[in-house]
Image 1: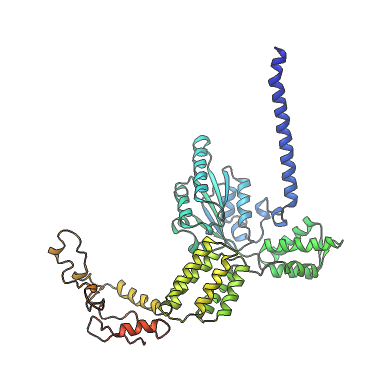
Image 2: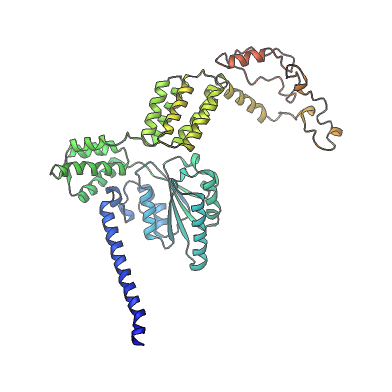
Length: 459
């Protein structure tokens, strides 16, 4: 009996040893991983006062600081350029909050991931009366369906959302989600804040640096603290590699040479503007240059594709109807093929759109029609155009007098299709460019329903 009683104890002892051993291995792995982590990650702040450059939000008495310190945070959107502290703020909240802190990256999270997280949050609240904070990095990469999946839980307070984005949330975050969140804008770090980060980085890397090397790193960082620390880390490795502990300007230049072109918030808007205007101006080489610059800098290919689809109608239009087909195909290829191969599809679309004949007459026509549609005297739907597919419609006169175009040899008929108040207004006036010239010729052969002459294709 004693022997038999000892077996469970032995198993428990063995299990305990394995558990302790496993914990030791896990602890050692975490320690080694921490040592191997990038410098910017190793220097992530553990106190509010360690965050540099955002005093307007985190200085004494400032709003975001008060919410964090009181652990009374409601849903927020942290908007700012790369390397300004958005993730650092979120991780700091994780250290101080009594609520459960969960984290998702919008790059690889799915609607299913969101729903599973919501289910766990509901169980946690019901079983332990503990709320859940969700940090969603790059929230702008969530599509509408994914953002909509979050909305009920944010609206009810089941989840406190911390969304981080480098993109303008008024364009990239669903309005209902944005309206239920407080927007905090983080600014690019000033040179003094970047220099402070570099000082911490040199201490962590156990190196010093020449002033001109530091000045170069600060200047090229352009307010991006992570960029500055990453460049310093490479420069320090170069110095240590040759047996020195002092970073020279040559080390800094070499480190910066390994970094992609700087592409911050202003670049995002300026470069896409240059891209669109180059294609509109039929400068195919400039269009390809700006495309390459955006892709090399990590711009979202879907954003580029969307702009090409818009441009196809806005600036090419009926001068080359295939432009819309090509742009749409490129956008689908971005989703189906993905980068890097989809770069070729985008480049083909750029070449097609830039070399296509140009016309903005569709854009102008819609604008003119919208003016009439929004006017107070827009008028009623003519009786002969009204729906006649229900019982009693004929008694109301709906559909009476409608002339079916396919009953005519040429497939069209001269009849009114708008309210009398706007019937004579011309919206679409085709240009003499490309395929639109043929459109103009066809329209010129057909007199307008108000009795006037047809279009002649000229403004």
